[in-house]
Length: 204
View 1 (cartoon, one colour):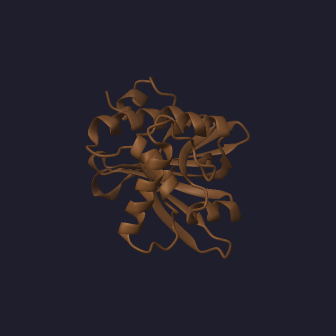
View 2 (cartoon, one colour; view 1 turned 60 degrees about the vertical axis):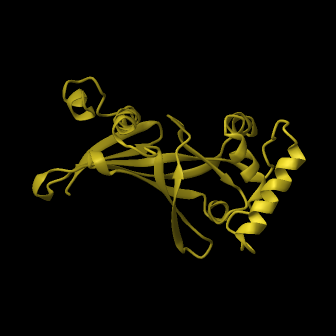
């Protein structure tokens, strides 16, 4: 059963954007061939200049949407200067998208450690080897750094780098967009005040 059918049948609370998100994501995981958790993350720097890139959703609950990154990267600098962000999920095969806007907080060190421990070993080593967003002399230089890191840990447990961690987007707005014929698309926007969500339909 699709999320739309489930909502129509009263199986999904249409006043709860988190329940609707979970349903749409479950369908995307079944339909999308690659990275259904991919999302565009938009930030602004200290001068108000926007920047966007694709990251992967690594957890979500009613507190928000979590991703991880090098905290010396450009995105991290933006979030430090202005701790707000926007997310966009676009599932082309389902002809759906979700827009999310909210404030930013860091996940705890314990949560970051727990997630880092689940990453493939090469990804763990890469987190140490990369000075993300900074100029790179050559690909050979990066490969040499990666090998040096591998030797350093020598088959042992790879600890989380101190400059690597997670962020949570705490939503204040969530908009669900569904393709419809004749460009009469359905747009349902949820806005949060305190712990309460209000829903309204928008013109396409």
